[in-house]
Image (cartoon, rainbow, N blue to C red; front, side):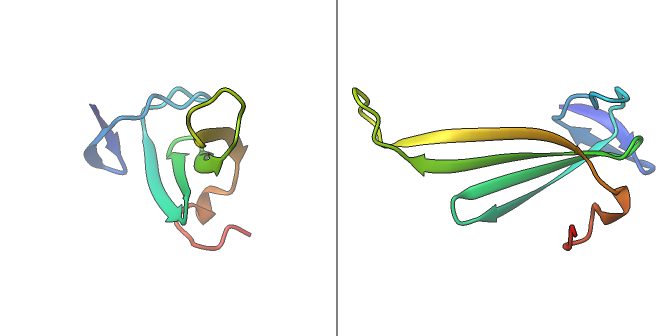
Length: 90
């Protein structure tokens, strides 16, 4: 964990720097709906947002001794920074 300054406060973060502007000022929030965990990360300096979705998928693969696999999807998106802390993303 490293300490960075975000909006005038010194906080600890486990995230790396922003891939666009290389700033350390990133914020994050999590949400969970049934078996889906979504993490949103926001760069305070340039406004770049990312989301990371993890979901459990039941599979029946041949020669496998487990039925649950973890699928991960990563995507970088540019959204309006004003909508970051709002519930409605439309």
